[in-house]
Image 1 (tube, helix red, strand yellow):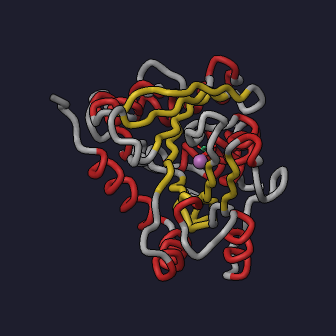
Image 2: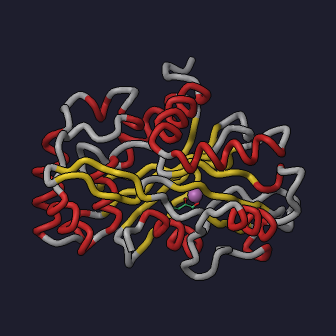
Length: 271
Ligand code: OOG
Ligand code: NI
């Protein structure tokens, strides 16, 4: 018997939090829902810090309790990130979950001091072991724009975490299952025509059919955020589009690709 929540509850909680914060996400979802009988979510992504109190194990727990298991491991040397992906043990139709963590041991003393004092010590000690940590958002209270900028000098990822915390930074439309689009190129053209800006780091399409995975994403829209210094517009969340291809054995590729992911992370960059 699994003790945890069902995957449906986990994704409903994450979806509500994500869509409430991001009007562009609601618009994109509505545009696809108008045209499609079904809009399938391929995966979501969550972020954290590599730290005994809040590391990726803590974020993964709610999913493991809901029947997920760890499948892939990834490293991003430049961005100082580790990541894993999880998939449901019995039900391949459940979205995959990508969880990354910033390797604090490779970051500066200044960054470590801010993350420790302004984020980690302020998180309630019981929260990371609870079943709602994965969607707990920012529980460290007021934030300062000066601190945001200081973090951003070294890590856009740390700066984004400081503002938003534990929530899905994206959901992903599975392009394979769309009936009114033949390719990711078509999806991108449609999004651009509708006025959405795409992440063009390394080109708007990351990956190739030979890698069995093509991905694109919108740029996170800038949303007003209250800092102690006043309100500023800060990149929030984005929407991703993924097309998976069958491998030689006929099975659909079910993993992630470091070279693609490395660029998708930048969808939440301020610059
Ligand atoms: C995750 C970026 C990686 C993918 O599909 O490769 C990713 C993130 O931005 O936290 O989503
Ligand atoms: Ni993704």
